[in-house]
Image 1: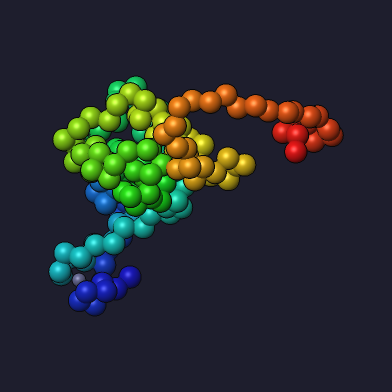
Image 2: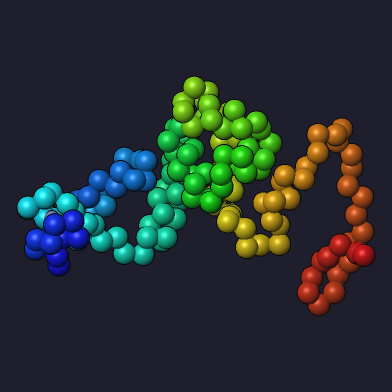
Length: 159
Ligand SMILES: [Zn+2]
């Protein structure tokens, strides 16, 4: 493999690679890293990267301690949201999101759990789109009156 910076030959070896661009202290164990001795350029081969990002996210939401600022940012990006979208889904201001992500404020226990649940069950491919969260309005609670009927497909809301 040739260095794309200087054209010299790169040497490939298995390394434990610190995955800094994740923003988290994650090390990829035994991945192929090609290095150029001439200019110092390197290239890391990360197979199945989407699966990796999901696996990291799943580990993060399983940790027992509260989420750190960097973990909040990682999970928000994993969900594919801009800060503004994240704020809308969580029902907070953009300023609150930025304070969570720069560590000036700790995320509360309820928000912490909500974020973990959204990661566990999203990005949405079920009948309940997370977009519906943004449609919740800050009115007084009112009971949901429902008619439910059963057919071959199971229980459903009656029209
Ligand atoms: Zn080079």
